[in-house]
Length: 452
Image 1 (cartoon, one colour):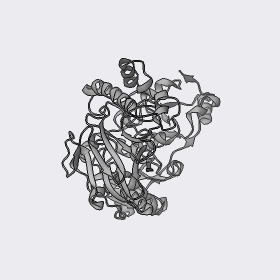
Image 2 (image 1 turned 180 degrees about the vertical axis):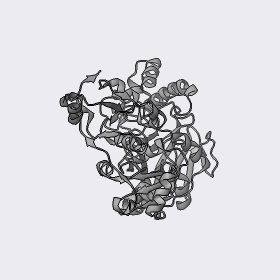
Image 3 (image 1 turned 90 degrees about the vertical axis):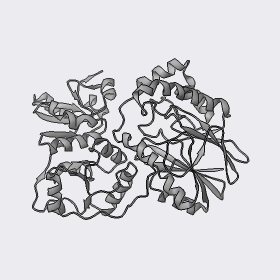
Image 4 (image 1 turned 135 degrees about the vertical axis):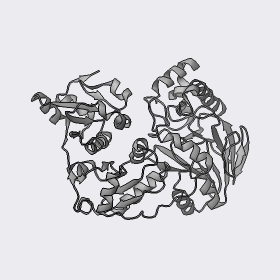
């Protein structure tokens, strides 16, 4: 048995292509299925079966389209209410994929009908593909179905993970879908795992907790905010998402760009945060094309708002499109490349300062009138923050901007990524803003007073 990992760092997830050298099973594919098809072609294997562990909350699945393109079986939990052709499986049902034997195991917790898949080769240890159930050191979060069901699902998650642990040997290999930065993961352990079930027995929250109640208390206490776009993923996946179009969007000229800005549409500049700060088209939003790009676009944009992308190079637009289709934003309404001079022909530019924490300390020492705004999540803020800072999590900024004083706003987060977005939103609203593009861990050494 060979397991090929298909990473999606932008969402913190993994998909898998599992094969015996000739025939493959694909587990939890992302929507841009060309990656899977290219991998299978390069390995010289045919895709016989596509299996979903659950209706995903953090991305749109490519499973239906992949099954149609390849002619593979498309497997979902029988209890799941899905509206597309598929093969239904329940707890204990078995599938054969080449020489591999696949057993579906009902592992509720992340969702009610969640399945894990145990794959046994003709020789060697088994592997278990756990989706959002057993993750490395932790489990999938249990509050996405509904607040009123969180306790029930958390208890189910505890039992599901223990059921997997009781059924398989220490050398069983664990392959989760979530847990690599995904907001679908819960609070994690502080130690590393080697990816085997034996290692998980030593570190996983669900396996080291003394009692079910202890696990519930610990897990629920660690649940934090999750992106708003998650609310749209389940219905899209249940309906059967179609294929995607990654061709270049329509090119937008400077006059049309300004019209879109004035109409309240989102015109997002993908350039480096410091380039954006130094000069950008008035009214645009800076969201750097980095791993968390799609997560924060999906979290912040009012769903359904027309979106136009700006980038120096066409390939940056293409990469942004690829990230966005994974969360159901199928087509930008337009794009423009060529850089700031091309976009602002006859248009107004804006800029704002970018500093580090040493500059903040110096400004405070001089008695400069300013307000420090911490854009991290509340849980992060409560663990330690700059003395006197106002906490407005980035995903609440648009709704709470009126709460901020009309002083100069010095914004920061943990690394500068979220604060760069926040600075652009504040600038778009006409506020005086300074972006602190620095690691928060540098603040104490710079002389910043911190509160525990």
